[in-house]
Image (cartoon, rainbow, N blue to C red; front, side, top):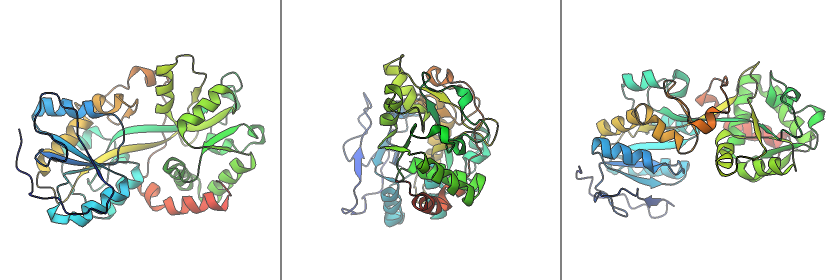
Amino acid sequence: MSRIRRSHRSALAGLVVTATVLPLAGCGVLGIGGSNADLQIYSARHYDLEGAFKDFQDETGVSVEFISGNDAELLQRIKAEGADGEADVYMTVDAGNLWNAGEQGVLKPITSPALTEGVPSDLRDGGNQWFGLAMRARTTMFNPDKVKPTDFDATNTYAGLTDSKWKGRLCMRDSTSAYTQSLVASLIDLDGRDKALATVKGWVANGVDIKSNDVELLKAIDAGTCDVGITNHYYLARELKKNANFKVTPFWASQSGGGTHVNISGAGVVKTSDNAAQAQQLIEWLATKGQSAFVDGNHEYPVNESVEPEPVIAMFGEFTRMPLSAEAYGSQNADAVKVLSEAGYK
């Protein structure tokens, strides 16, 4: 099923935005750069999850097309295109980015019992502008040959890594990583700025070894060149799928305290969409019937608590998560960057 879209895309040639197309066998609706799909999804989510959208199209007959780019570019494009734009759904990673999109007024509040029932209240906007669809945990990882679970501070594991026993044994991501910034923003929200600053200074004092990405970090732990680090859980799941003997084990942080830091990917209906009903239908489907298809491909946790996590991450065991404050991740990002700088974190 197709329909006629708006006749043009705004001529924003200066923006670095790439049109991508789902490999939908047997469907002639989508073409490179085509604009006749039912839904246009502006997505900053760069995971190989097209299968979920193919399932959605097969089940509903609603076709989709993606415009991909980074968060800031896509948000800028939606705002610049305004009422002439084609975006129906804005999809992105990081709760702070979702909060920012809501603050900038590009999303349409929607009424959806399916979403308010299926998505926990702290994983969706209080004004129903955006909804979390997949959840990741950023927790401690360790080499079991060198570290015992009892070595960790179970009350505040992140701050516990400032203990001198971890000196020369830590690997972490750099200060420009959104993962690092959101983690520090959550620590500011949870512990206060002074304690968060002390925590980051403690990591630096322990000679933290900065890695360029989570995979490199995990491989360093596996190789024994560092003993413990902090990564997103799904990177470990990917490595274990390739090598069951990968020597890295997760430790769920702060289970006797504030819980493990989590973040989300999510989406909202663009305010200027001329197909808001089907855009809402897609988001509802991804959070309910299509939840497993959406999260399993990247080993993420479902936000819908009635949906079971896929087997690889289920074997990591259950954990208590830190309540998520999208406003803190968004509004305190700048302060998190300052804290990292003040602490001398590279």
